[in-house]
Picture (tube, rainbow, N blue to C red):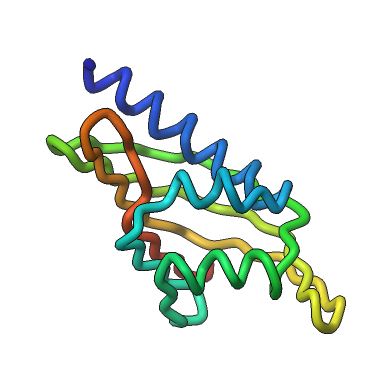
Length: 125
């Protein structure tokens, strides 16, 4: 697969991840993130895959998730994606809503023919 094709594939996978968050599709989300996931929120909180999926399922409703200017660099079996992420979320326990504008770095790892996100880091803008 060419580097251009990999870049397009990673962008498509990230778009699918965003749709899965809004749809609360935990099955799809689970398939897109690696078992060894390290997800660092803009607050500094660190989650593994299990805690991240539980957070999506029980604590946060994603009302909008939109990527801006996603750039992808491929290095062998690793793809590094950086760009802006705009989100509107709602805390399920309180109904409080928040708009988020963050810059993210994501690491996608290819195992065989499958790419999965293995790391995520967000920084508030």
